[in-house]
Image (cartoon, rainbow, N blue to C red; front, side, top):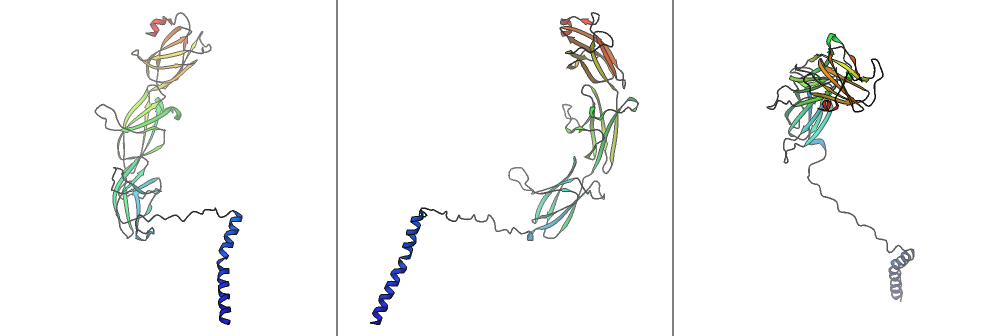
Length: 320
């Protein structure tokens, strides 16, 4: 009888345990949670390679640069770029870069191309990296160029009106030269590889231009000053000598050969002109006036064009 009672108890206990999930499910339905859908765990992407991300297999390479052979290391201003020498699309992939002076890179063993730029000067070298630390140096064979210009007698030119452009020394078949650096400010140092360069100095924005060939030597600062034979001229149309400038005047400047070289509109026409003879034509209220004048180097002056019958010319003739 005891065994029968125990058997009934076990059957009852099993039935009670089986009813627990049913009760929990009923409770969830009451709370409205049975419709809750949780996202599954996303699959992870397999690694593209089995190479370790640690730098244990890489080697340290120290890069330094000098202006000349056996010169001192450059301590700042260098841009380092390290490339892999292989490329499928013609472009070398850059793997590392740094700014400053001497730089240390951690690279996987192999062959690389290193480029060091110092201003407009630069050099490229192929290096081999192993597991052992090593050092490589690049000789830039470069120097500095500092440019300035003065007027006759050493008169200083306002820096805002003076600019330089640096070109390659050799001209192409059509006479053009490759531009290296435009709009160089006076007295600024430009870093260049050693060699000869064609320098164009422009004072103002018309025709005061000086061209010269200048050689840059490695490890040295080359300072060059050119002399402009020019002056700043201010034209105005007046009804009487010393009178007020007439507004809304159109100006045309002709050189000695009669070719137009500058046009502007306003009460005043100010411009820097190279030494020589010129003709200025002023047009106001359908009347045209002209005057011939000469520019003397270093002698700035005001040119008054009188709005009188004596200085007037026929409108159609002036247009021609």
